Image 1 (spheres, helix red, strand yellow):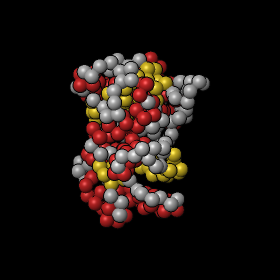
Image 2 (tube, helix red, strand yellow; image 1 turned 90 degrees about the horizontal axis):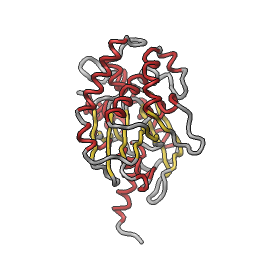
Image 3 (cartoon, one colour; image 1 turned 90 degrees about the vertical axis):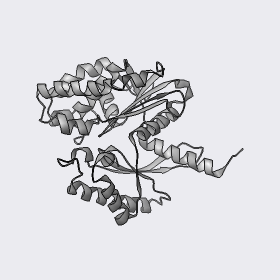
Image 4 (spheres, one colour; image 1 turned 30 degrees about the horizontal axis):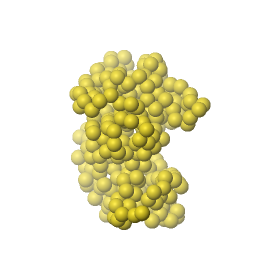
Length: 305
């Protein structure tokens, strides 16, 4: 249950093997944007979310799902009525959703990226832009030395600071200053561990920005995002309407409104952390949750051969 997308990912998974996606069922509810003046999730969003959970259970039953792992991120975590909503979901559907703290989001995403790129990647710096928050993690092992969450999600920033279609130049400048100030507060904590050998971006926002800024490398399916290309695209995105952004490669109609905010956060994070380019990970938070669950299964089973 993310701040942008609510997603049921059905996987064929067992310890010691790569989780294989079998089916996907999702909806762009954009919870981070459907808040009232007090930051509460709106009744309409609640209704849509409950309907989606119920439909997911039907899909899962049809596919023979044996275990449901439910988790929610910053939109639910930060909403004053988040706990009440989770209680309602549990009572009406039987699904018990675990709310992930921001640091846990960063750690689980880092785990997924580490497993995908392997130990040979060395020290990793991982950035993930969601709808409600930006996660930053860095380290040499499977557990990062640094795991930080900053309230700079693309949906949140769009809702709070980038009104208009397109927003006016003063709004964009003010949003840029705000983003840089917020990231600047955590730069020292991130860089104290040392220079990363590889920087990786995960999440739909980074994948979309990489598609906008350039084609995939013909030698590998992993895309690369260069800061110089992103810097060229930011003013172009700022001048576009939502309809025009939706015509860009990889930009869905549901994400078109938020992609400027995502670009501002990505550019600021890359510049302030000294990142010239990054690779884009196919795995992110969902895969991290699955991998951690499989690790727990192996641990409970005891030592093997």
